[in-house]
Image (cartoon, rainbow, N blue to C red; front, side, top):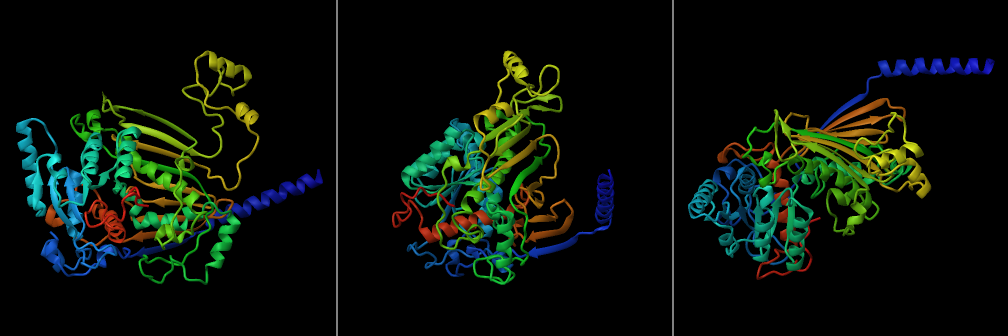
Length: 543
């Protein structure tokens, strides 16, 4: 009894001290602003300006990203710049082309929506002509077939609505043109596979315009945190100490081809969970692509795919971190990364639900959706429908399991089944993360994404699909917040106002994607060019 009394007193004393610390302790707060990273587009020579449709007024402003290719830009002997074409003349095509032109890239053609009716064909041609006049594009077409026959095009940006990605992409690939297709790649897995199989067969470049992963803030997140997650806490701590006195690729010194950063080393450990909520109220218009099933509408395809992409990056970096160091994730250093199999990135479980109700009306698309993606572990206690408890509201037992089966419930897993089938525990190296997301067309949201680690969390501030600001929260093991660091990245400096107001926030971020594509083509050659076959047979996949 005496020993228990002392133990109780000690616990009470410790609780008082801890409460006093929590209530009175103020965590450190830091703020870091980093310049936009050096880009390939900025390193091109100023000669041969006449080959670009860049407006002279933009060059005079000295905004950067305004120089076309020099004749000696590539190692593959290309004597002219990468020639872009735009397929589609809608809102996203406007923003992307604005950045292309402002970046000093060459746009040679545009084609508007393909319609088989003769009168609408004229309307499509008129739209293409208006688009071409706005951006000083020399060639415009009212059909996609005419664009496919244009020999003055190297790569086509497919900016049509979701349901119309497959056919134009296949048409351009079959015509020997490389393709950058707007997200989502397609509306079904089968369509996406057809597209990538065609590119593989012809040795052409095909990539989906998921711009999020090209933003410096996301690259920083991957290099500083996600690439370290397969290491134990002790290994991460030791690595941080070993790098303290060495030149890091993320050091305060500005190294060639690297962005500026600060020297802080973090010890957050493995990523355990993710949360994200992307929502905005769309116009209540059944003809708009958002709510129109015929046009490939639905919130999961529109913004939910960004959340899935950010979760997949965590899985990808976990597997890659064992092959190359974290520096190569931020910027390539000439080291080849092993190609991952689909099984390595495949989630172990996906649960999704959604509905089409909006302001009392029901639409044939998912207006609101909620989904969870799981890697590693087993789905203990997770059941479909309303079968997570027995008829009396208690936990599942052998009797209630049989009762659930009689009621027609499909049991995904159970503790009893899992324990009896496999008693082996996951190794420390196993990637285990649960990502929970929501997306909505009928309400606003913070558009933030949160990664939760063993000793802290990282929040990508909204809009999370094009983030330029993040906050790192570092915690003690028992939960006390000890440090809060906000890291901001400056966006590319360019003036898009000559082309009117942008339709989407931070449209200048398209420069990150354009820069990567142009740099890839400059270094490896342009697939499909008669004077260059260096990338043929490689599948044209940009890592």
